[in-house]
Image (cartoon, rainbow, N blue to C red):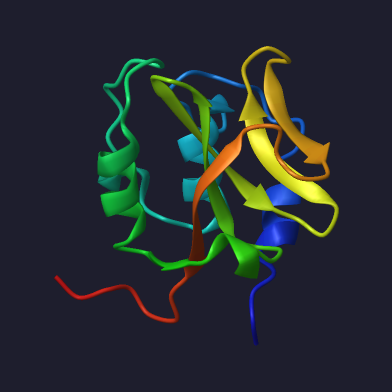
Length: 133
């Protein structure tokens, strides 16, 4: 049975936004990914600033659970890594009609219709089995 990660992400809509949030008291964009894909939150760094180009570190950590695919192959359930500013990246999960992400300005996890307004840097798809170290 194939898990529907897009629906899992959609179930988080309305969860409170909290910087570096990883649980029921709130989620940030990384927390949305961890919760959607049931990844142990202790495996993700928590002590980071909201600003700061963490792209390479984030991509490296994503590759331990996901495989990178072409942006042209984007489909529901994929993780989208976006550049929202010169020194800031953001993640979301693609759904049938848009993408789910933690929206700091709104203060909660939301589903935004359509394609992201930000440039897509990378797309990741869940691996059948975690990558061996």
